[in-house]
Length: 199
Image 1 (tube, rainbow, N blue to C red):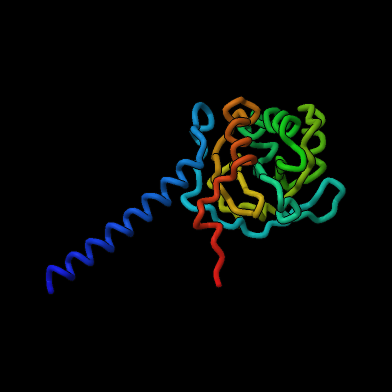
Image 2 (image 1 turned 30 degrees about the horizontal axis):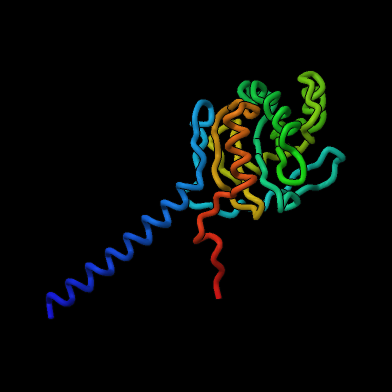
């Protein structure tokens, strides 16, 4: 009897191990290879829903992150006083010009307290042509998304799940960044277990 129980327990452990390994293998297979500046990108251990986040749009109205549902979103938290943010802004603008559209959007969310009065002159000076202005003068995103500093950039899937984030600046229009983002756009990275629904 004792041998039978031990054999049953071993069988359960083996099946559980196979399920975890196979599930993790599928999740890792979905992740593109990372190199160069994209090495700083940290995929989420498990995609999680991004909390609701509101901001001010270029026309002074209210916008919500949920407005972009159906697109892969690159959400960049930045400010004009942040040197690395300033450094990467041209590459974010170029990325939006290259990939932006029905499938993908760069949402560069300024946390400047001065709002449009600070950001518009900066956009004009830097020559931003493709990005839309989004403003968070109360820095609500800091409490909601809990970044450790600026810039912080999140990749969010079509259903509003955070797939990963990159802390610090990056060359977002580089071939490796575009390749990674095209992978997210074309393939998605949600592990199969995230697709299951209850009931």
